Image 1 (cartoon, rainbow, N blue to C red):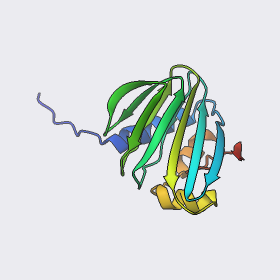
Image 2: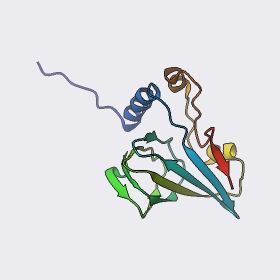
Image 3: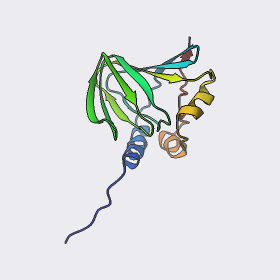
Length: 153
């Protein structure tokens, strides 16, 4: 019997991954926010062994992996292992799943005069309904660039 199967989109795969990950112990990642004239800089510290997913980016912006080794999967990069030091460009509509093979620091740079993290997230990220992920996790899971341990310098 020859069955046709629907090919899942990248977003559907990442959505399923997020639901599966939400059932595991969640890690509150350290985020350091910095601002200069006309720029928001977000430094994300990802412990070894941690799986992360991103929201869909609206804008093109540079990123730097300044520490560590991380396996990244996306439509734009395919599946690659990035080792620090590394500089790349995130293209609009990019959404990633990543697995930190060692402790990793991933920094993004966004052109904006805004300093309110919620407003910046609205500018640079597509909206996402987190209700299913929160239900699977049994706690509120925040979308965007907000985490309980966000630091601003």
